[in-house]
Length: 305
Image (cartoon, rainbow, N blue to C red; front, side, top):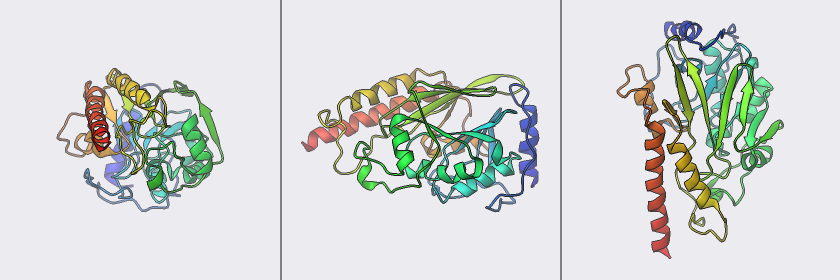
């Protein structure tokens, strides 16, 4: 293991909020790890390899440069949110092991939303870990079949992904517990019907911070879908606006997003950060920007007739 990753593992042992211990690494990674840290950019490809790193406390980045995957660790087991694409999943597995964690200690899988760029690799990671996936009902149906439906704004542009065998449906406001870990689900439909954001607390030896993994909030679609057509999908726009309001009011010290570039994550997590990692206004600003873009999208739909 190179000096950079060794330092990360040592830091993890010192920065857990409660008594948390790293398990021994296992030499089963299927993707070679770089000898030097990779510098990621906002326009990186979905499958571009990234160096895994500590975000804060027991929260770790294990995704690619273009798509996030977040690992939350404890001595009783770990939670993984998102997988990237099917092609990227082995890289996520390798990143977890490169940090010194065992794949079999991942006990629970979660997702942000049911698109193949974020959830396409979950079936592979389920095979590697035997962990169940917890998902809200709209995402649950997609993950069981591997196919989206017309309820998704981007339906005509989406490709299928591997179906999953072990999926558990959770309520919209479910609090998920694994040992000492507790993570709160927040239904944030809009980008997709099953969009889910997640909040939890991570601590180091000095402080505990509110972590917020907020799902994509972009109002984009295929050429048929109209967000303003409440007759075809009743209540969807109202749910979208309600989610934006809830996000803007969340306790939010560290904002994380499924697309790192959406929240300037590489400017905050890189070896030489140019922006502060901690920003209590991060969720508010993210939601307000999304609300403005939604208004623009609705205006465009109305002008198109």
